Amino acid sequence: MTFLRSLATSKGDLSSITAPPFILSGTSLVEYSKFWAELPDLFVAPTMILDKEERAIAVVRWFIATLKGQYTSRNEALGSEKKPLNPFLGELFLGKWETELEGTTILVSEQVSHHPPVTAYAIYNDAYGIELQGYNGQKASLATTMLNVRQVGHAVLYIKKFDEYYYITLPTLHIEGLFYGAPYVELEQKTLIQSSSGYCASIEYSGKGYFSGKKNTFKAKLYAPDQSSLLYTISGQWSGKSTIVNEKKKSESFFYDATEHKVVPLIVKPLEQQAEYESQRAWEKVAAAVQVMDYDTIHLEKSKIENQQRELRKKEKEEGVKWQRRYFELIEDEGPLKEVAELAGIEPDEKVWRFTREAFEHSPDSKL
Ligand code: HCR
Image (cartoon, rainbow, N blue to C red):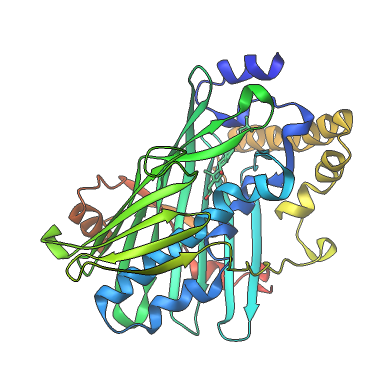
């Protein structure tokens, strides 16, 4: 009852929901940025493709491949969707992927706002000259049987060799199964991936039934610059198999199989080497209590962190200072990205969070 009441009164702020212990996760939301690059081979693949159209397809393939981790991995590993820990302001999650062919891919994820919650991230691989950065927050509303979640923010993929940007919007989602205590995510509406080269992909999502009767289905259309013609239609399940149709040749071929691709685990420093503001170290005691469903300890340890944060905010107020974000800054976007967003008719955010790579590289945090 407390859970249902807290859902009804959450006023769009997911962090205010009090979930029962079996729905709690010991993982902070700041960790979720890793899902963008758990498949480093697909992440760097577009950098090796000279043809713009083929490159745009490779970007769509990478994007589709990220969805399984982002939206179904808790269900697969833990049996249902879970409520992540609410990151505190300044919380960091750092790590790297080391793979034989792709080399090092680095992840920097930071909680840049607490009210409303916003996480910013940067992921880059210098050997291949590719970088993804973005930020996201969530606005929720309760419908009769489900929780609707609209994502705020966007991601930007940059390929250095071609000086090419891809502006990526985030899907809306809803959480079903709440009243049976077995929540799961379904994606809805669409994602746009607009390239500075002009190519644009529109990816529509549907749950069970609408496109094919199968869960987690999507239909993506890749358009030529200026939306002059439809080049490809890609469809199938983002958590399973999909195919691509070349609309000129009317030929169909294999696109992606999410069940075949193995994720590469992110390497995170051992807890004792992490700074106290790093996510896994900061939440260590809460995460351990979540494991054994010890609700009193969860509550006690969470309160310690929350009180510490309250004290910090109070002190800042008294001293008339503002919390300095570590590696991201909120700027007015006057650069090329604004034009890329406008190409797809996307209203760009007035101010955007952008990575300050120099600050990160000059800090001890960059020793991963
Ligand atoms: C909605 C959600 C928190 C936000 C999670 C986001 C949107 C975060 C950014 C990632 O890139 C993508 C992503 C994936 C998750 O599926 C999504 C979470 C699913 C559930 C969680 C709610 C806050 C949980 C509410 C409590 C439930 C179980 C009632």
